[in-house]
Image 1 (cartoon, rainbow, N blue to C red):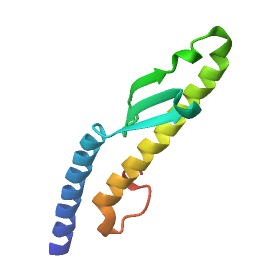
Image 2: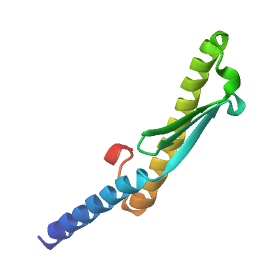
Image 3: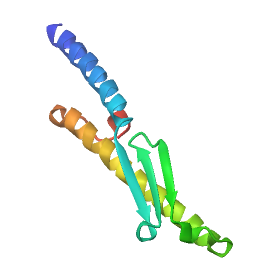
Length: 106
């Protein structure tokens, strides 16, 4: 019975740490870039887009499709970086616990 209570206590501590990590992810920002820096997207590791910067040279009607493609690419780049940041935080939190991948939204 003591083992079960110990496991429950560890689970509660882990849940608390996961919540703390989730809160920290809101403060971790990454930047996705495309077009050699013509488009930049900043987002948190929780995938909240904070800003988009577009080089003025792309603000022409004939460049609309290029701009759209660069926005998609920059968003995808930022998302990959945000996911990496989230995985690194989770790994630091759960590293020694031997938990299966995918647990807690990894």
